[in-house]
Image (cartoon, rainbow, N blue to C red):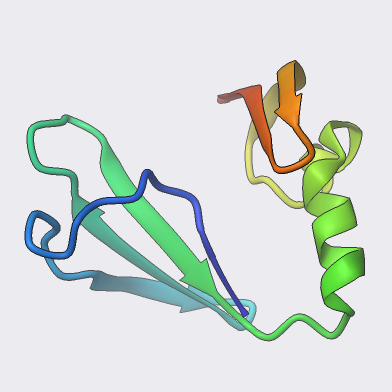
Length: 92
């Protein structure tokens, strides 16, 4: 199972993902975002749960501290539709 936590970029504009390390069964990759100081990252691993359970945890802002490293604050800003929302996350 793979979750991308970066904006969608066109394949031609995006540099290749570079391995950044593996810990606790999670492989992490990073790459530069053209025209931005932000470093994109992604991680992949096997999750021993149903897709519905995983989505339920990821969609619940009150549980984000359980799975997001160094998260200080998380809140829902605006629910646009069942599939789209604006959220605020602050990490230390």
